[in-house]
Image (cartoon, rainbow, N blue to C red; front, side):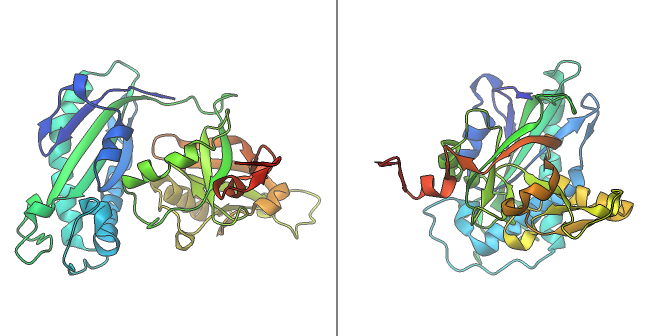
Length: 328
């Protein structure tokens, strides 16, 4: 998997010079807000699950606005108490969709000209609150004020990994605790997860999160699934009913990933046993398969899952425990 270090960035209708555009992670670290990342498919002929991404983006804006305005407007912002936005706000979803689609229509044709045949586009959309443009009442006033929300779209080149090829699987390591405000996808997480990166094993490709070292919640940029053999299964011939697919529920504090939801829908429609429960590392001997999902990688087989680093748990590393007589 490769992503071009530079890309096309559009903010509030203006496309930046690609030669001065920072990497997408640098851009996200520097700007607050709710975001989502999708990509094209079939030689950039279509956007994958775009309407689902727009719906989740609007929901992330609503959650941040209601629960933690600094994640939407930026740190050190003094805000008077704001009226809350109702769940399933159709007006918010409509406004966010209109603003984002308008921006997409401006930047996508430019980005398509810059790609080579066989390359796909990664598309990261960030929606931030503009404190200086709030309505007189101090709220978003969605019915008559589009300027209270800033929209940026970052488009890069993406080459998907070939599925099923040895060596292209994920190398997973459990290294840290779950996210706050996990139901929303927000840019500050790019900065918050940096200390976890220092705990990444040399061969690790994705980091898993858990609050207790046993119940695995999700990856730092993905959702985590296992195919688990049922403990009470004593059948001599294994059938689909001998196993179940498991992933942590949203209520445990995980991101409602787009591909996560699609996997759930496929399991339910095909009669594949499925249970929303956090996979337990203490029961990993029952795991027959593990995989992660994300909007870029879609689904990726896990080749290894590591729960310890250098013989001690990641929680010991994070909390400064003693290893071999020396402070970590």
